[in-house]
Length: 227
Image (cartoon, rainbow, N blue to C red; front, side, top):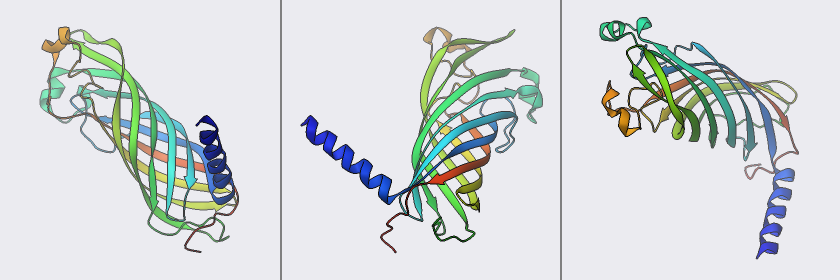
């Protein structure tokens, strides 16, 4: 059984190396939080965000995409347009690290072996695993209870172009709908801290990444079925 598994993995790896094209690169940009503390603007980056990414292009229209990203999410009630939040005056910082895997779809063919300048809008979604601090608020400020993890659904839209041989530049905006309501300390998981919950406890937290991607392409010409 083990020999069969090894054989399948080897065949898969050989096929991938000869029939696919790969991209590896970086993301640089900003992040902002949307929840029960601070401003409610959807795209308003206020902290630096960065990461690395890898794409396995299965066709000119779709790719499997994997990435690691991190940022510091921050928000301050004093900067909100809502009077109630201004009066409350809460703020927080949360160090967030995420792993992402999913499918990127190009609206137009993006065959990097054509030797032409290409431009296409794209969308990406999948599943994110994130590590963050569980927070809670007291009158004198917020505190960290413990380090925890959760999941999120990424929803990314962008546009990309090949700027030179082997180089692809993209600009994208991505929302993360998380499975937690406590990135901001508004709904602690710890049962001993439940009385400190506030805000809309029925809504999950969101955060946004906005920025640029730059990837280097390598690998043999793909054997696309459409060609």
